[in-house]
Image (cartoon, rainbow, N blue to C red; front, side, top):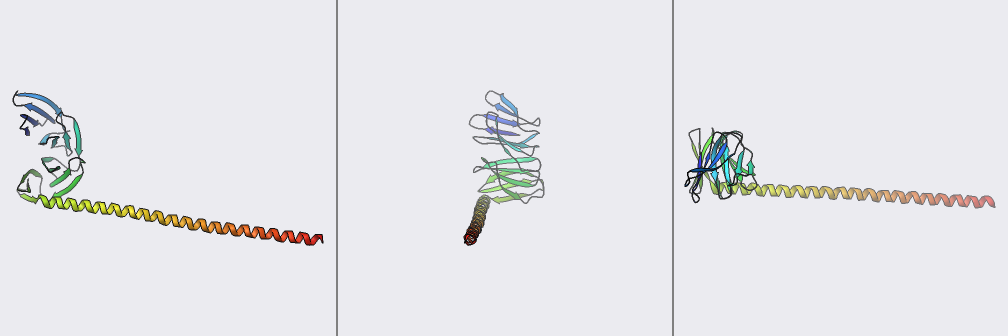
Length: 214
């Protein structure tokens, strides 16, 4: 598996021995090499900031260009064959028959595209659409704007649900506070009543004492 940096004339090779080799085409030499996965490398995608690597290890890993690991994307249930980046989103196709959409910076899975009956082996963008190919001998066309809209609607629903839970928790706290205040008020009344009875009893005792002396 190969991926190229056109401007710097560097090629990154993903190998079965779990490593990535950084190769200088001009010098025809291996600049550096490191273990990228816990199993064979089957897909590489390069951006200005990251080198995304996937393969027989179900975890997708992002490395910087110096070979320092930066991020992990956990969610696939098998081998990952394809990686593509579009608008700060990472798209991955795997043996679990799904295309997953990730937020690059947070590593959160934003969406899961289902439709294939076998492993997804290739991904490509063209004319505002995503094309996914599979071992099931089919190609599915996905509308990018529709995917973004679904993600946006889902995020809005999550935010609304979170806000609703916060409101419910606040209301529960208010109700508990009212009950506590009511109990305290009742206790104060009971205490005042007892004090009043006590004073009344003292007054009666004093009166009887005076009568006895006469």
